[in-house]
Amino acid sequence: MTKFNVLILILLSVLCFSCKRRIQSGQFEESDSSRIARTKTSFKSVTNIVYVEVYRRFANNTSFNTQGYQLKPSWKINFLSDTLVSVFSPVKKRFYDLPLTLDHDSIFNMSGAWFRARKISKDSLKFQVLDVKNKHINWKNSNVYVTFYAEDYLKNQHLNVEKLRQTTKKDTDYIKSLALASNRDQKKIFAAQQPVFLNSKSLNVTATDAKLKAKILDSYYIPETLFYPEYNVTIHKAYADFYHSFAVLVDANGQMHFIEPMEAMLPDENEHVIKIMKAIMDGYLAHYLQITPGKTLGIPHNSRILLVVRGYKS
Image 1: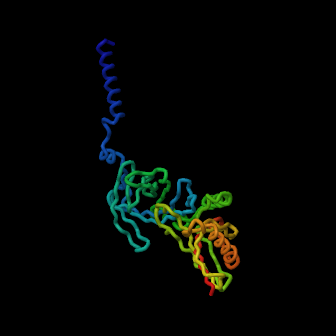
Image 2: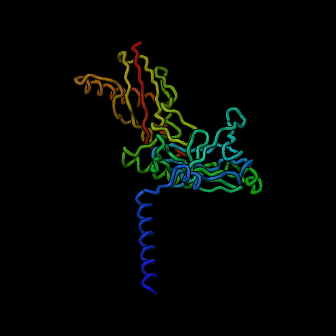
Image 3: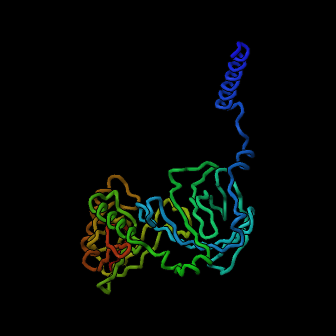
């Protein structure tokens, strides 16, 4: 090889290395529009196919998280194009055409929620639900996955949607493990899908059914505060007129354990008022209420409730 050819090779190597360095340093960084065009997904191959959501699960393949929140599949969709999707409303019993926005890396927005397409076929779809705030994705909280089957696929495979949507043995085993963990550590107590039930054994005591402080949302997103059952208990012929609000742990056997007051108090009266609350719980509630513990999938476990107790002398 001549000296000239060697010089040419050296020059080409230097140029390639220089270009690589410049790309790595961001001098030739790809534009947003170019990246979106190159990496966005498309639904053109599956247009005019009605899909039914059959699974909505966390990354561990269960329907529950550690707080006891349960995911429930409910959606029915039909992609009309790469800009329009038809979504069925179970309330109105009809489809509504809504805008569809495609973004980079197979990310898209549909009906106000952000997803990442994991699988697209004529038989099924699988999406990852993204937690997006201020145009930033929180990947740690993007741990919900949804699966849709085409109506024709369900029919041809003789599959029952309601059976597919039912909880699984893995769900049951997971709840059992959470229940055991909550027995060992109060910090691991989780919300019960079937809340604590209070039944009065006295004509002088009445208790309302549980009211949930936060809605059980039919959504892909988990509410920041899970439902916290609140009960109003009224006691007639009490030792005095009183009004108190406090949090209680109801264990798997239906026994109440005082947690903390839920009302404003002066520092010097704190200890005295808590003593009264505990006396009301042990003296009235434990004797005059039949308490059924909270349950999830039929499994009784520790759960927290809020009690608003009113006493009347008359």
